[in-house]
Length: 196
Image (cartoon, rainbow, N blue to C red; front, side, top):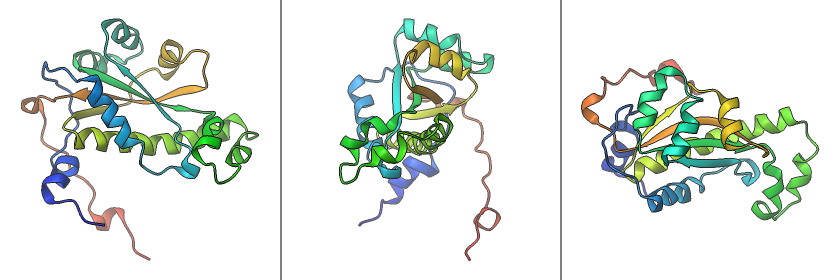
């Protein structure tokens, strides 16, 4: 397998930033589909693919979301062209006959308690959420992932009557680089890693 060049690595990692200010530039629905189609290819345990995404674009949907946001996240989220609700289906096992046909994987999970299912969905859905951010960046979008909202309110507004629960939010669009703060430091390899 070949490596990405420095330009690609800069786009996805080194120069990419978390944006809070947005240019008044729309994001096409076809581009959102491309983001998902890339993100879905990342690995998950038993190919469970628990991530579900709601792309909040319309004024009415933004108002529903606004009611669940913590005060510090309202302005930047309302200004973003799109906010992706990165969510997870706790009953991901229902799709396993299609997603993992080489074994009866549904039987591995269907009788587990909800807390265990939610833990598995959260871990794998968070992995998929990270793939989603990398996919969006690779397609030229800026991202503003965040917590800072009432999950129960989001779930009631967007997932009522389902087995889907919200994980985190990710604002999407074209960020205003002039409003970025200097990048915060990261831990060095020696601080964060050991080879044993």
